[in-house]
Length: 296
Ligand SMILES: [Zn+2]
Ligand SMILES: [Zn+2]
Ligand SMILES: [Zn+2]
Image (tube, rainbow, N blue to C red; front, side, top):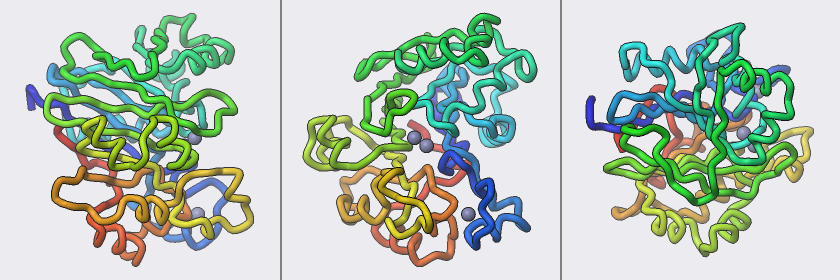
């Protein structure tokens, strides 16, 4: 609808997707015969008040995700106005090549990312070719400076730098500021301790209140620290959902809405009959669903 800003959920899974390559365990067994249960790497599609379209994260499942976006929020085939990338880990950026000659051949798409990620794009021949061929124009943003992604889109995006293992680039969460609501997109971070210290706040609620957050989509990669068999979880740090629930407590009347995203294939929250999901729901929170949308 005109005059609304809509945020559509185009993916809720961790970088590897669901099922994950090489996983022959029980977690991915159920998806093999039921393709409808598949999940795609985290991504959002934002439709501005003028119908302009803005993509958050550029994943390899872009074809499926753009189709989903058209199904839930048809916009007469409008081309993308801009794209945003949080950081350089695989599932957040691996669809970038789809903008090039071999596939979409887009024209000067505004790609918004940090200065460090811009440098990585220029230094990666495959991605630099997109710049040279005029497929993308990279616009580096500044930490904590909100801006309109296009002239009449009706919403701003404020990048917020977040501590997250930075082998390739730094990481920014995005605060999407609509005319009615603010939505936080925080798919990855190392720990609540480091994140809260970095934004100079003591608690999650204090932080969310200071940014006037109405809807929070946050890192729910792992349910608990015992989940990954045969991998050292300290090398892939994320606050577990169990920890986040402890810090959050129950939802109360004045509270924001909160949904977990970026779920690893091993996360029991992917099973809608699990006791874990029941616990999350009982506390007043939820996981995001692909195809769901919010008016902000
Ligand atoms: Zn990730
Ligand atoms: Zn699996
Ligand atoms: Zn990451």
